[in-house]
Amino acid sequence: MVSEAPPFWWGKADWRAFALWPFAAAYGAVAAKRMRTAPREKIPAPVLCVGNLTVGGSGKTPVAIALARQAAAMGLTPGILSRGHGGSVSGHPHLVDPDHDSARHVGDEPMLLARAAPVAVSADRAAGARALIAQGCDFLIMDDGFQSARIHIDYALIVVDARRGVGNGHVIPAGPMRAGLTEQMRFTDAVLKVGEGDGANRVLRQAARAGRAFFEAHVRAHPPQGIAGARCLAFAGIGDPGKFFDTVAAVGGEVAVARSFGDHHFYSTFDAQDLLDTAEAQGLTIVTTAKDAVRLDHGGEAIAALKRQAKVIEIEAVFDIASAPRAIVSETLEAWRRRRLEK
Image (cartoon, rainbow, N blue to C red; front, side):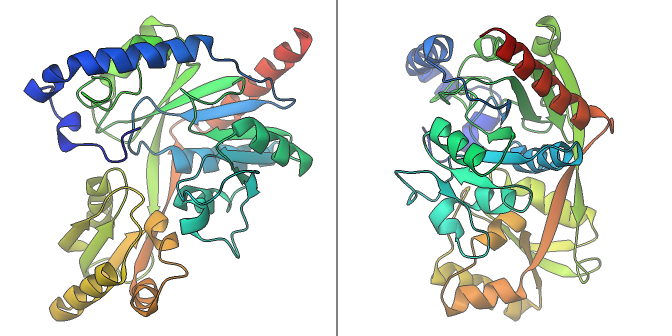
């Protein structure tokens, strides 16, 4: 899997995409075959997958949190499956302890997800599912893994960013798609468009042709005091930093300096000191995302100072139709009941 998406993936397809087409065709064929034929273990609990069609951020994390909270409100005990991005968790599944774990150990997204429900980090999703069930969870939300997880999915909700959509529409390495759109739509139950823009229109047309359900949501920002009217140094290491900079402006901050880092970037002492020095020299308020903030825990002196000074904008996913999260959880439960009757 590509660790960082090249910028040309997110524009109109150009000569680079077409030059890489033979490799993309091979990659797409393998991915499609894997989705069709790979064995998927049937877990003794309903499984709702919150996935996406591409590499890079699409807003899955706040959506998974919203659905976990909805499941809890319905009397269920949700648990969240994550592969994590830290790289050091291996072997047996690891249940995230938000008070003692670090993002470097388990990944930044699991640290955020753990605010809403127990999280199991494991490359083996089936093992992670069993660990959560042993903890008393009776409703599993799988963050990502739509194309590759080896467990049966009862309901697959695909999240699409309204601004970036599927980029140039080509498969890796020619574009950000993890497999062909038609092939992926065969395994999709519903599409969720997040945000404003027409980048998702191609996916929505394909979903309509395939008779899939369609939902819409937007991201609501919760800025701390001191951002409105302030000149800001905004920094972010997420899939689409530009989206965060727009959020800062939307809540009243002036983005005087914007610093972009790679998705899931772990900040070095040099990074932290540079940000601190720049903000001090220009009299700027430092602001960042919740995902970046959790990556600043357990660092050195400069990183700790950056953590203290940075104002964090928290976000939540808000469905345009208030009943949509309940409908998604209910459809997952119904699919699970049908699966049990098929035994």
